[in-house]
Each structure stands twice: as structure tokens, then as C-alpha cells.
Image 1 (cartoon, one colour):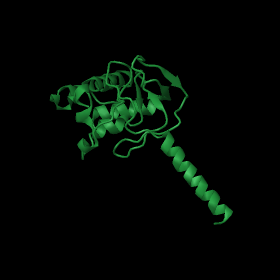
Image 2: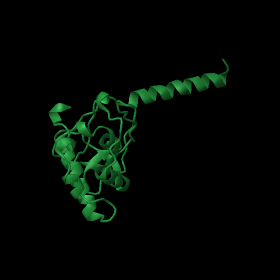
Image 3: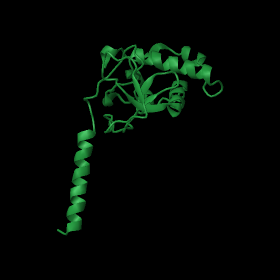
Image 4: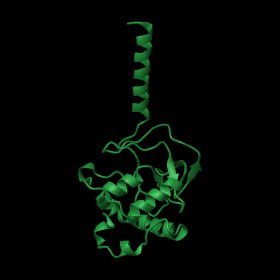
Length: 174
């Protein structure tokens, strides 16, 4: 082996090891409570929807995420109800069970909820698995976005007239 190919091999191995060390999978803390933390969940990949749900709730979350501040939070601490460090970042990435990659930061939405970059993906493809506490936060976020940014979000009335099938499961179901 030439010195250059040894260096390339060593670099590739180092990067693979670094990624393996700084990547989390099912070890992340999940939250479905009344705190400001939103959609820190890990839904069952076998229940992923084939068809994405692109309704007013999804659009409002997408809009809010595009306006969010980035930083880190202490979501894994059950005593913490909404700590956020603007401008900070994590040292690794999180992969959902279906292969989606999150960013290395959390996001504080305009209404103060703190979430991750996979939140829109969860709302789109795992709606029935979203706990009721998180569905309430999603609907509250939508109402906030409609009031704060009129004309950019659709009317909540159409959502409130839907049957309870989009209520999601309880936190005990996850």
C-alpha cells in the first residue's frame, strides 16, 4: 500500500468511527408531556404511512420550523420544562428508524415550542402514532401561526371539523 492510500484508508476509518460514536439511535429520550418539548418521539417504523399527510397542520409546522431559532435543549432531563441554548449544536446526528437524518441542532419555534428537524417528517408519515399531548401542541401551534401570520396558514376550522382519527395515540401507546 502506498502512503497516500494508507492515509485515505485511515481517514475513512476515522470518519466511520466518529460517525458511529456520535450517532444515536433508539437511546434518545422520548417526551410526550406538557413541557415545551415537542415531538421528541420515535415512532414504530412498521406503522409508517405510505401516503404523506400534507394538510394545514403539516404546513403550519413546516412554516414554523423555517422560522425557528436553532440551538440545543435539555429535553432528555425530565425535570427541565423548556431550556434552550441559542446557537449551540450537538456533536452527532440522529437517524430515525426509517433512515431520515436529523440536523445536529434543536429548533425553537415562534410559539416557544422546542423540537427537532424530524418533526415535520413525523407529522407527515406517523400521524396516527403521535401522542395526544403532542397533537394538542401541534394544533395549538397551528392556531398560533394562523393568528400571528394571517394569510400564510389555512383556517383551523377545517381541522376542527375532522373526526377524531387524527388524534393520535396516547403516550402509553408508544
